Length: 193
Image 1: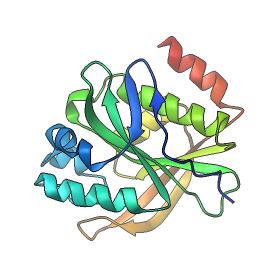
Image 2: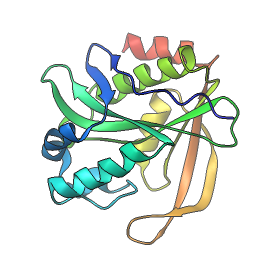
Image 3: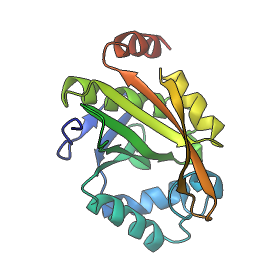
Image 4: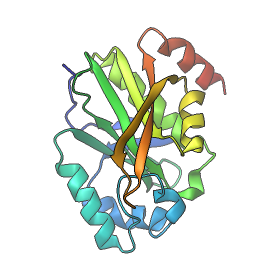
């Protein structure tokens, strides 16, 4: 059984606020990433060219019972700059996945990703009862792999031809995890930075 999927909740940090994703976030999100091929390159949906296309993708995500999506709100501006999601992990005992994450290019190489992951991982272990947080990415997405390893993700392996990319090519997926007893040391290191 997976860890309990949470009801929509708001998670507050110094740099970001994670709140349940709604269609009201679409204008900000489109400003952050609409039409940006590089932002959407590794995601499981085509690059949105209009707010309506982004809204359709968000609606599917919001309506999927295996996902709990959050809008990533930059505290400094109050604007949505991306989204991230808890995902159910059937077949993994007391685990939850963090994924379907993207941020507008303006906040790349900032504190946003680390701040989001601290909030999500803390909540997964402290409130949801997870003993393992799973993260995964396309084998070609080396930037994401480095970010996952920076927060403490341990490389578990590669699932070959795990799914098709939006362009129809096969994706090999790299899996990482963080265990509950490993997290305190990683968290302390991240907070020192």
